[in-house]
Length: 141
Image 1 (cartoon, rainbow, N blue to C red):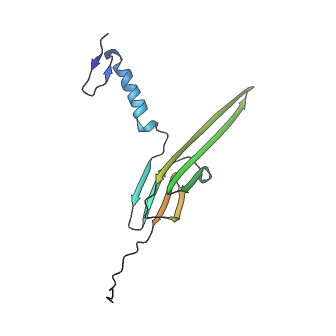
Image 2 (tube, one colour; image 1 turned 180 degrees about the horizontal axis):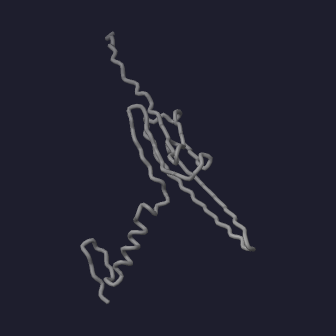
Image 3 (spheres, one colour; image 1 turned 45 degrees about the vertical axis):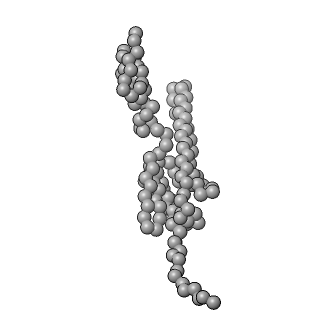
């Protein structure tokens, strides 16, 4: 069987094209990503970070700030046991993630607030107030 080259440089075997497309879809599709979607917005006074993380509790989250890097992580473990007719079934569920963001120098690391409501973790980071240089007159001696 001959290999065929496309313009993008990938080789593939024509008989397995749907199979290759399936792998490309599975491994490149964001639906299968384990990281939560993030929205970042900036206003004049603050930065706003929102993560879509439904199904967790606020106790599942850890938010750390170290050397101007904000790290948001969560770990969730579930165990369900169902018994009946001499059969025991256990179902385990485990999920975790960690996202890190480097804060700009203007971010006020002492004024960060977090809130978890309806599956959305919202983090507000205040900006430092800019000190404007004041004009002054210098006397000549």
